[in-house]
Length: 200
Ligand code: SIN
Ligand code: FE2
View: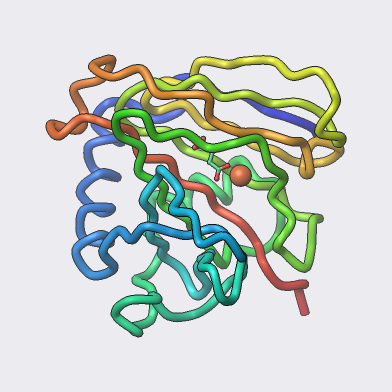
């Protein structure tokens, strides 16, 4: 398995139901502005998490997973059932995800090319779900210098980065405002489901 692109994987009604569940997540665990290690430069996306572990970053302690929301100090809310069901269907991995990062992009928000490598185990894939406005997703190889290709992700699309592509460089060039009516406030939510620790 490598990169799997599942366009339109979630139907409209499934997207709305998932969005309702995510609204509850964001109510309990508000979006925060992450900052880069050392420089403290704010990222343009806002984020929160659900699941036993959440990915966070700040100037002092850098990229990491932790069990508590950095601002509220409370545990992250549970991963919505619909996302666990999706993972069990598409991940091809015999254990549930431990982390679901929720990224919110609006306006000029973007995400530079990076690898997801803060996990202890790369045997499980990363499963990504797009909701709301479309985005230009860029994916390359295992080296930053490898050629990349662009993929327009629309609401309901699912991407699975696994196998030899688990550590592929990827990022979001930009979102395409006004391309979806799912979020009345506009913008794009992206959910990334991951295993963090080794099994057993
Ligand atoms: C990420 O790599 O964390 C997000 C990718 C996306 O927004 O599609
Ligand atoms: Fe990523």
